[in-house]
Length: 88
Picture 1 (cartoon, rainbow, N blue to C red):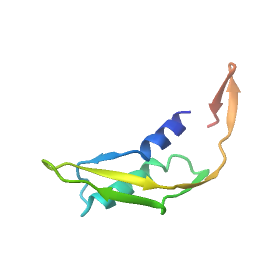
Picture 2: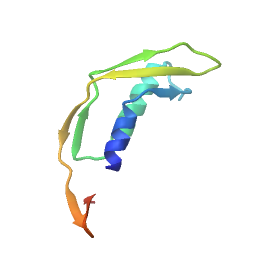
Picture 3: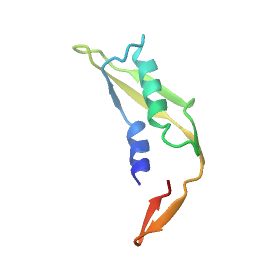
């Protein structure tokens, strides 16, 4: 469940303050790819995402991320004490 929450948060709107790249779009793309790289068993294709940079105000901007992520993989769960958990 935690992974699903992280995944959903990663495709929402991001506040980018600058990570040393030349553009907020590049920073946003790098951030999403690193955020989604949480499991080697799940392959994600983020090439379908689009990044739109908003107005810069006081050194901050908002990058709106939209599009589709292709996902292929399996998640193994085990039941512990009556609750399903992701197997490690």
